Length: 129
Image (tube, rainbow, N blue to C red; front, side, top):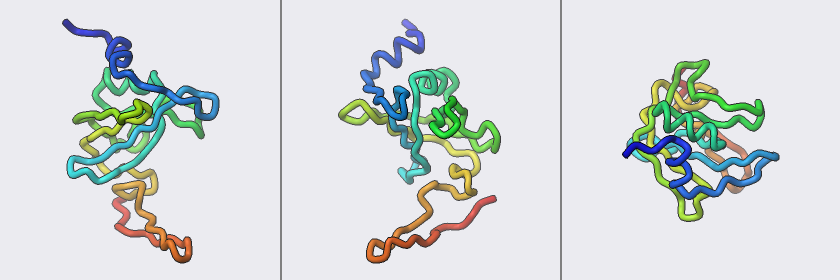
């Protein structure tokens, strides 16, 4: 029996939080090795689109709209699997990343290493663009 997308999302037992006036949850994407590529918010609609297409869709709070990862850059994220956290307010996706994940041209958005004694950051890794 195939369920429709809305039923699948309902069965995931998620708790969307009120963030900037929108019902959102945190989405973390990692590559197959477990390296964190990025975090972003998801709305129910972006989650439905992700399930429907097999590619990551997020909700941009700065642009106030749904967006498909890679819609401008071509650096898409194909979903391999997904895990729900114990509270149901965050999802962890394993993805197959095409190109780089960070809009600044790095594989991961987490390329700024912070020195806790000074608070200053140093870029680690190389730009891929």
